[in-house]
Image (cartoon, rainbow, N blue to C red; front, side):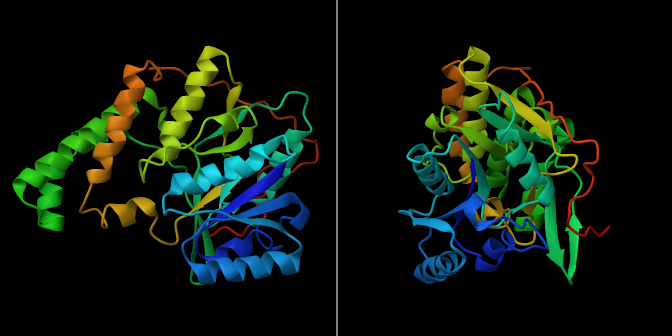
Length: 305
């Protein structure tokens, strides 16, 4: 098993993975996958990996998150490793997470894939570190929200566009409520076996590729083809970096353009028509045997309220 770290920008965030104050990954446990259109970023990461003795690869980039993640899957499938922990380079493994995934490899029957429930985020500000409450979704509130007024008042959109975006939001959250647990909000699958890596991310969309992949893995689990389990992020193994705006904010023009939802919903409809979505289906939880002296609540990262 190795930790595959995908990086497209943010060199300081990449270095955090190997810093004793944060993840403290050892070079021999990691593979850095450079998937970027930024030549300077590729050069500096390549130099860093060489100096630290970290295995690295530069892969072809088209700017979509799915292409980068599929590059990771391809490298993993071509390797001698039995399992891959997929890490976005600007996110963060906790020291507990490093222990958790390395320990999982040693168990008798590791799952094919592991879905995080109640995922948490991290934000760096003013020399302090803030760890968020779990990401959960209150679907009923979102389905009752007046998006038309919001879009007209906040983004000065015309009534027709505001109503169109409201309809997209109602479809989006309606489908999510039907097929997701509240605690699956981020659809983060970290642990992947060679069998699970056969199911690729959809490069035709720029937002939601994680969710579609998660639905596919759940479908395969329901069919009995894969052993997919969940783990509650208390304490967290993986932290989503909320310090800067993510892909959703960028693609949606800071909340003013939601055409990406239309493409995602078309893909979701295809899966629904193919019988790949299962209402009310819940994956089993992973059972972990911790050593008696193991401090489960110790992130190893300073928290601030």
